[in-house]
Structures are given as structure tokens and as C-alpha cells.
Image (cartoon, rainbow, N blue to C red; front, top):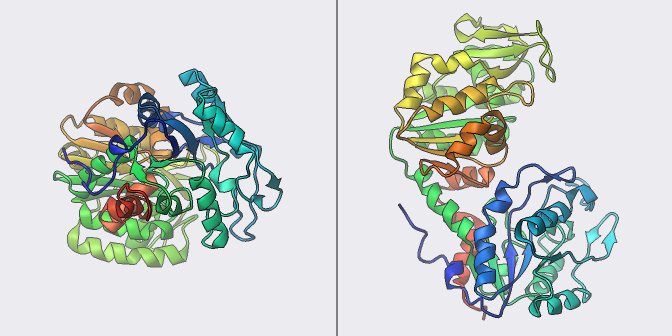
Length: 435
């Protein structure tokens, strides 16, 4: 098994005893005030345990949702995107007390910065009267995502809270203040989850062949870069969702409801590439529906690709029919693979789920391959559609579930995890105090 680049400073070597340790996690698991799945939180407990066991005093932080309005720049601190549910979960899980600081919130601009009111909590933390501090949602701070003097000020304020910085947020690959700028001001190290994600990413970047990748998405244009990178890397590629619909439109000269002409034109390049290399394994049966948001008997049906007619128009194609996975070519592609990477929900949830379930069950029939799943929706679908299978493979060394699907795709596009700016910043700092 590979290891992380020795130039990456790691938490194992961090000077932690008696220090306040600022830790950036990716605990972005709260939706409408509820934790959807605590998996991302649980995966970071090893780093948290290590810090406390070695005498460190932790200050935790994460982003949740997208509080910033991209058009207006306003930051809205909605209670449903607070860290409260995460703290409740950690307190029940660990039986320790966390403190959430309260800062002044501007209704349109969020939190301007960290004021001195937090000093009382830090004193209590050092004196072990509380187990930890959990800062408010990092994206509630108006300067977290900006690149200006205010973001520099926020970085200085965060650095002023602690002695050491740990980044264990593999899923947060954007270079924001709490993942990037802070490394210039404190000795900085990678947590255990960050290291594990990087190591397992090597199975995708340098796969045992044959390598089959399964990719889906709700938009074609946002996945073009990673899609082409995966196409070049894989021996076989299975598509789902709007990405597959767009490919079908471009290849068979048909039109499917919900697929834009712009995307169809963009997909023609992929079609031409595949005429030469023939890597795409087509799902021969798809599910067409008259309704986009409901699954009503008599309003949906299975279509076979062999029946497509040039110039024909079809309704919403919302799933892969489970019979596709019994097709000889599809089955052979999956069962003969030595590496399988999945970043895909095959159908339009929550009503069209047969394709995703059939995909996961078919992949499990391959008993020798390394099977790696992207984070987010891919993992959530696996867990909800195949709960028994999910529980049975959680500790199976042949399976690995990434916590950040978008980060994996970005690293594949770049060809390495070490080009991701937060990781590169850790390596540049080298874990040493800034000059």
C-alpha cells in the first residue's frame, strides 16, 4: 500500500502536548438542521482522539452549506446551517462538553470577525473545564471565501486562537481562509483522515487494471474536465444521470427532455473520442418517464437503445433499468475489473433508484477488485438503498468510501492530490513555524 508524500507534515509529528490545536474538519453533514449521515464526523474521530490523548486542547471548525449568495455577496446565517447538531452529536458520542462561541451577526453580511469574548472560553479550554470549542460555521464569516485584506485579518484572528493547525478536511478542497490562508500563520499538519484519503486516492490515480469507472451527474458542463480525465485514465467507463442522457443524445442524434442543446454539442467530442477508443460501456435499457418528479404507474416505461430512432424525441430519462446490469457486456466489464471507482447516482432520486441499487449489488459480486466510492450523494444512496450490504462492507478492505467526491474528481483532473491548494499549502509550510 502506498504512503503519503514524505514532504506532507502529518499530525503524528505535530507538537501537541499542552497546545491549543485548531482543527479544520469537513463536517458538512447538516441539512435543514438535521444530520443526514454522521459518517464524515465519525471518520474524523481518530484525529480528535489523538489530539486529546496527547495533551492537546481542540478548537474545531467546519463549513456547512452555502450561506453566501453568489450574486449579491450577502451572507445569511441560517439556524438550519449552524454547527449545533454536530456539537450535539459529538457530545452524545464522546461524553464531553463543547462550547460554541457567539459573535455578532449582521443579517446581510454574516460575522465580521472573532472578538475577544472567546478568550474566556479558551481559558476554560486550557484549564480543562470544557472539552473543546466548536467555532460557528466558517462560511458565516464574511471573509472566509474572499481574497482581500479582510480575509487576511480573519486568518490572523484564527491563528491567534491556537498554537498548531491541523487540516483533516479532505472534502474541502477550495483555498479558503480556514483551509489555506491559516497555514501561512501556524505550524500546520495533515490529520489522519486526510492522510487516508490521499493514500486511497492512489488506487484511482494508479489503478490495478482493468480499471472501470462509473460516473454520473445532474449537469454535463460542470463535469467535462473530470469526465475527460477519468476517460483517459479508465479502461472502461459507465455513465449515468444527465451525463449519460447527454451522451446518448449526441451519439444517437435524439433528444431527451431536460438535456440542453449546448450540452449535446459539448458531448459530441466525447462521442468522437469513443468511436476510436470504445471505452464507454453503454447501459442498454433506460427508464423514460412522462413526469420529472413522480413515479406514477403507467407514466414511465423502459426504453432499449436498439429502438432509438434518429431525430426522435423522448421524455425524461430518469433511471437505468436494472436489467442493464444483466447485459453480457456490462456484467463482464464489472466482474473482470481489478479496480472500480464509483462517483454516481444512476437515477433521479428519491423515486428512481433501481439503477443505483442494481449497480451496487453487481459490483459486490466482484470479489477480487478494489472498490472505491466517491463521497456525498454516492455514499448516501449506497447506504439507503443497500443498508445490509453497506454495513457488511464498512470494514471490508476491498471497499473504500471517500468523504469528498468533488475533491476526488478534482484530484483526478489534476493527476495528483498534492496539487490541491490546501494540501499544497501544508507541504509548503512543512509543519514549521512561519518565519
